[in-house]
Image (cartoon, rainbow, N blue to C red; front, side):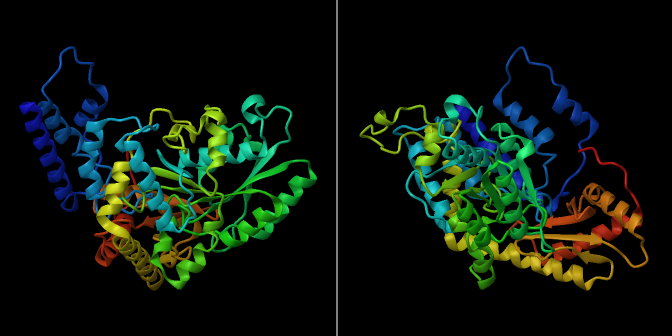
Length: 475
């Protein structure tokens, strides 16, 4: 035990040394060939090794090549730095190593509070038990759509979808692919996923949604779910949630909101935020990712429901007459989703929220949203950049477009810029496509990012173009 205690201290020191060094190092760097061989080609060891030796290997070969999201100038995808509290309690959850399927123990019970806190943060009506932590929004979406399918086809668990009318799912052209994956995995069929066009602000076009629903009804196809976004990953756009909720109510659809990234934006508590997020509280289900804006170390997703009976009907294998067990009438978490063995996610979620408090989380949200608006202003003021969408949350979509550059050249440049900037190591940005053209996107989530970091990002893009170092980056 003494050796393990010494190793634990070394592990803690190694983790803290890593976190302290991240801001001064490269945001990202390619893996050296020798380290790549070590990472991917190790033979299975016949004999074991001391834990201290393993920690040295992790330090030298793994921590040396971070993804980059711990750095203040990481603007890629939607990946936040880890919350300090979440990092520190993670070994404690591992030391307990419970299965949080349910039962009378700390891990399962703490999840009730963690889920309730998340619901309170985003203002979602949360009956006790109507939510659970998941691996991420992809699993949360599967659980939500399975619950919608159960409501529409009461015998689906016995007969599947055989003999039933096709069920249609509606998602905007800017909606996340997890909705498509969930529909396909649940047997709804990609043929019946309806892509709803977006307006000039990249929000779901509600008039077209109505027309698509009517066309399906006339064709004998049953509308099932409309999935709206409270913060898309391309531009941070928020669909007109109140209008979508009204359409869902009129036609009896399940209303799902993908708030994986953006739902916490409601904490900005401004008139603009209240207007943008109005209607989110009307959803039948809401997907959240505490491991995005909130910074809980992965994995940590969440799905919330207005009615706790729905997911339990969709997943429980416990007969209703046995559900009132006298200990916890809500039953086990494993009755509300597909996972039976479930990790102790709640400790990291609880610790992160408890450490920051509502005020601290709101401050982080306002900080990153303010920086997004600052970056958008910088882009608009520059003569070699073009803003492509309003900066609503903390994502800015733009394009490098200097005067005199034709469309074809601009397209090629914007496709090549992200990898070139990443390789330089001073900032990290990713690309996407908007309205059929290559675009750049910066997602701001790090609480230590400054306006100087944003100015450096734009300068790094210019430098990458001047140097024309557009070799393919091995990622």
